[in-house]
Image 1: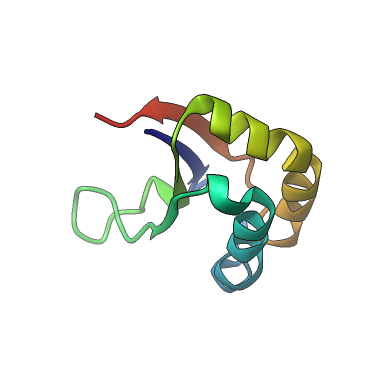
Image 2: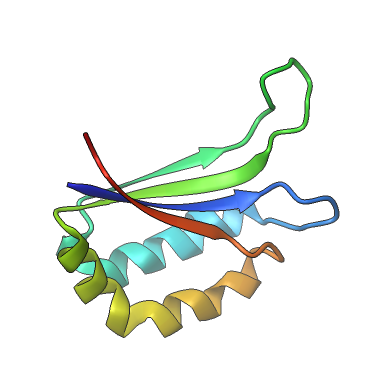
Length: 102
């Protein structure tokens, strides 16, 4: 199993609309990625390690797929539609990591 994490750094002056992300963008991804997407979890940053410190990331989504092949086959034809929705909820350039779940 693999996990694709899309992480949004909490950059000074950046914007992120969590309601849009949860209500529109994540359902769009679920629809477009279809059955290949086994599970998706969203993190909303609250703080850093110290109490009341700025969270290093405003949000992250962790999407689980059976394999890298399953991910790339589902994402490839839908990449443009998914990426074109990003400006609707954030000004942040996200970081993406594909990882093997152990």
